[in-house]
Image 1 (tube, each protein chain N blue to C red):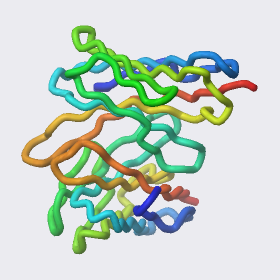
Image 2 (cartoon, each protein chain N blue to C red; image 1 turned 180 degrees about the horizontal axis):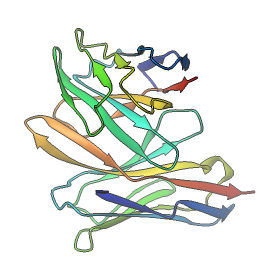
Image 3 (tube, rainbow over the protein chains, first blue to last red; image 1 turned 180 degrees about the vertical axis):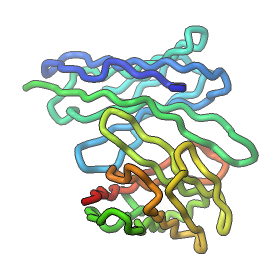
Image 4 (cartoon, rainbow over the protein chains, first blue to last red; image 1 turned 90 degrees about the vertical axis):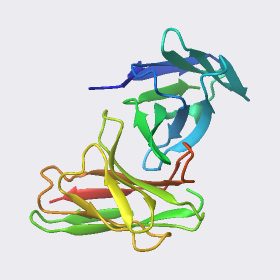
Length: 115
Length: 112
């Protein structure tokens, strides 16, 4: 059972455009929603994260929009650059007991920004 | 990557052999995790450990084993019982009681 659904699988954007990646979750116990950026052959790096008490968080060109009632969240990359070309993963986390937190990942979106 | 390292970067194994992947961190994090990444499948949790000498199975633990004898180290053994071991393996760490995880650079395992 896939608890975090991510779309699209791949995305091609022109330089300077806006990239939008969407995720939907099922479990209302999730309370932390990070986005990771991964370049080929490298480990994922934390990009930006949000908690359900806010509807939007912005860091530089990256913005997370969060819709608690719809159980959806999205990543917006403004003024997309070729260096942003990477695979992006959304994830969701909840406390699984005691001090245990487990991340559930979406399947990823391959973003290509054309120059 | 920062203070979490994985070795080797590439690993080749013959069918029927066990192999151990190394993960070391100097971030003083209590929690450590192992994930498997396959093309188009995202990251799937194999094992995790919140404290030394204790670890729990993740979603796909069959065919894998771990140990946590030191806070800094969390090696993963891929046993011959793992039917499809060829994958990219990622180790992560984080502060116990928090959500944030930091990933290592990964080990690509290929079974010949």
